[in-house]
Length: 180
Image (cartoon, rainbow, N blue to C red; front, side, top):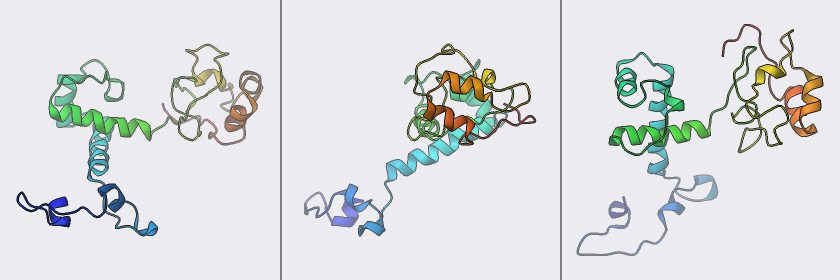
């Protein structure tokens, strides 16, 4: 791209008047608004990773599962580097997928209170306070038999800010018919 944009050749070097990062900034800020192709590529790989998660019985998903994660699911696979270029690329896309995803809570939720991403908190989406209920506790213990949040337990177990996220509607009320 720099060859096209700045007119450089092997024999004739030209001045790059602006960095590629600057050219990729938005038009709203007065720049060119070019796509950062690395980020665009990672987004497309995240889309393919999502397809492996949502369509586990597709031919591509079955072949990749048989080779790289026969006993687990795609989101729980160990991210090891020894694999094909396609596999390493899918794992790179999965990093973006994991960064932008979080759990939705149902009544039979097996989501971990402390280690999974489920709270609508910027950047981490996780509970930040110390583990009072035990580090392996699941969200299921925070749901009352009627299917709503156990507000008494939540307020006793978490700091006010985190308790308000759950009981004041920041996290949707659990649904009785929703499956995990």
